[in-house]
Image (cartoon, rainbow, N blue to C red):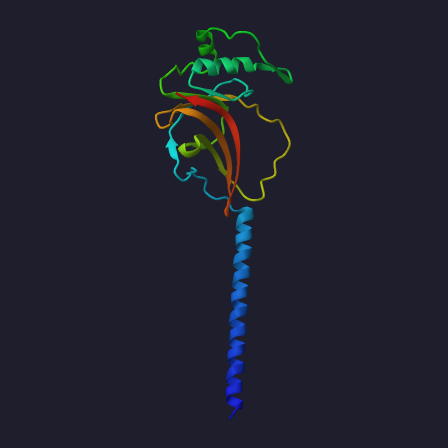
Length: 210
């Protein structure tokens, strides 16, 4: 009488072992696929949005001015003067300029002549990233520039060669949504992976919003 129940119990145990083994094999296979995807699959890059942040639509203009400084002000003339003081490349080094800046008309011709002074506007001279979006976070009074891209965990092999020179761009930021007071301007360099992102933040400049 005991032989049949014992046989049934052994059959059930064997079935559970087979099922659990199959489940473990599937989990291992999925884990391997996820690891391979993280290593080799490039996700779709997209704008970065922070909780309780206000998206800011900005305008930009390029220049042939070497990226030797980063400065921000509500005065476009002040930004141009700071860029002029930063100097120029002379061979393998740069030489800062001293003394008073040239007059506003001369500076306007030299740096971003397509823009003129406007009310409720912040101007930022910076080394532009390829793709970005801008947000304002009021709780900590921060303007954050999300420079984003997508890539694999293993970066592509890059052969040594000549590094392209960086130039200054002008970012024109409307300040209607920014409350008065001091403002920190942060660049968030972000690389999106298949699983998780890499983010590194650096303070570019500070400014005062009137």
